[in-house]
Amino acid sequence: MTHRITLIPGDGIGPEVTKATVRILEATGVKFEWETFAAGAEAFEKYKEYIPKELTESIERTRVGLKGPVTTPIGGGFSSINVELRKRFELFANFRPIRNLPHIPTRYPDVDLIIVRENTEGLYSGIEHEVVPGVVESLKIITEKASTRVSRFAFEYARQNKRKKIHCIHKANIMKMSDGLFLRCSRQVSKEYPEITYGEHIVDNTCMQLVMNPYQYDMLLLENLYGDIVSDLCAGLVGGLGLVPGANFGHECAIFEAVHGSAPDIAGKNIANPTAVLRSALLMLRHIGEVDAAWKIRNAIDQVYRDRSKLTRDVGGSAGTSEFADSIIQAMESAHPAEAQEV
Image (tube, helix red, strand yellow):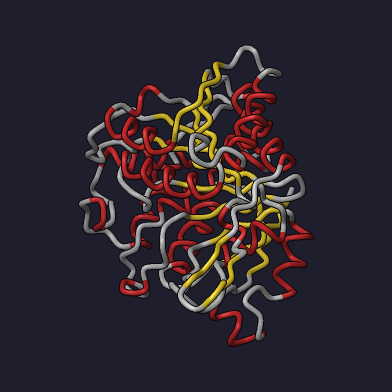
């Protein structure tokens, strides 16, 4: 079977880390057909669109995308390509597993957290206007439909993967209507899953609790802005955004992406670390049913990080992007598939 995948290399270091990832994926023996498209500023130069029609049609056709980082202008310019893709394809659940890699020094070993973030509304709806000069209003949109479906996604994942506990993270003590609605929907869904312990924590306290004792949490369920902030905090527990994967799920399609920036200052120098994109690709492999290939790559990543001789500079090594990819492929030759479980 050949898997057709939409590939969005991105900009900055994106083309380098996605190229390395594609090379590793193809070395598993799984067959891919890649449909490659630009997005963002590069796409606008070519097509006068930030998300070209051809890219949209490709995702509608393949229903699976792998994406590198795309630069988002700050304080002006075009809207986030990530946010636009999530809205356009109703990718309502952002999924970020947070786990340590071997021999990456962190304050907390053996962290194992799953972050599920509502992906289509909240303050990220981007509905803003200037009321009068010097006064800007931004609307936070929370709906029963979106809150219920992301809650059900989280509880279904927990049930299928034998996770034991979900905390809904909120600020309903202040935003009683909007966050209150998100909480009510989560509570209602939780009743359908009696085997999963359900809890609620206020978002600011959650941030403190995470840096004091992350082991008290198993899965966190959050609305959009809180999820963006807390998931980056959790990435810091295991070494940073350059190491953690991300996925965006909808009912019709899914896009898998690195959550770090495009790092234009190191682009083209063959020093970027492809680990985040590669680990995102593992989630993609699991999604398309290639679990053995996912485990082969995961075991190889662990082996390379344990050995440390072929790591990139950001994690204490001296290897280049392509050399790191070579070492993963070599390690895969001795890696063995494991049981079908979380990767």
